[in-house]
Amino acid sequence: MKECIIKAEKLTKVYKLPGEQISAVREVDLEIFAGDFISVMGPSGSGKTTLLDSIGCLTTISAGKLTVLGNDVSHATESKLVSIRRKFISFVFQDFLLIPSLTTVENVLLPLYFARLSQDNQKAIAILKKVGLGHRLNHIPAQLSGGEKQRVAIARALIISPKLLLADEPTGNLDTKSSQEIIDIFKQLNKEQDLTIFVVTHNSKLGSQASKIIYLQDGRIVQKL
Image 1 (cartoon, rainbow, N blue to C red):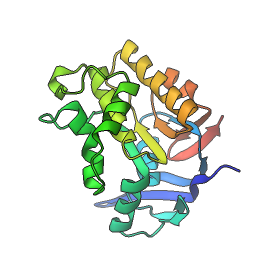
Image 2: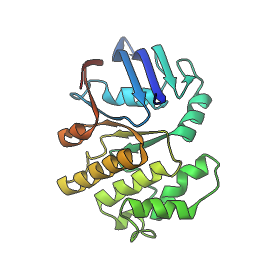
Image 3: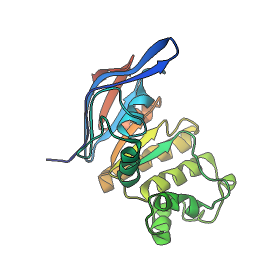
Image 4: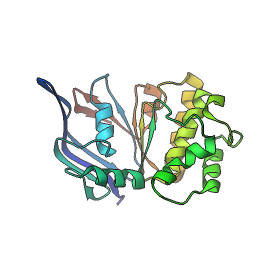
């Protein structure tokens, strides 16, 4: 049986604001297994990004139980969440979040620096070649197209050999051609490396490529396919 990467039981996230409380995620039950390719879809404000932030240990949960790679993080400290993120989880966001002054290779190596791991230039170069950027190794972000920047972001996410890749609207700032290239990379990573991928998206074409599709509405899962 495949390893359970994420198990959420009645996961709830409430944001407390002056004079009100907003329940962004409500009693979500979810299991993610090694090798899953899951897309999360739903209208704006349905809780998609909050769910991703929760299972990615970017925020604490308000109620319920969350287990990440066998670690109960329901009441984990910030240092514990950071430790799990740096070792096992990588992220790709709509905004590429590249350092403007660093080359492509240097941007990809950053997670190793923050995780206090040895720098591995050859691994970074190999990953960049895999995502089609072998000819852009020494370019800075200003010299890259939007699609190329997102491929750098994906390569950066892969440098720590993550157990889980979380992507929040990864094609949101891209044109149709570049979006398809990103979709193809995700499919390839999932198929060839058995990488577990969890994608939040409004892109129906990307969403439909996943092996499992979850629909959220008002913070609740309303449909699983």
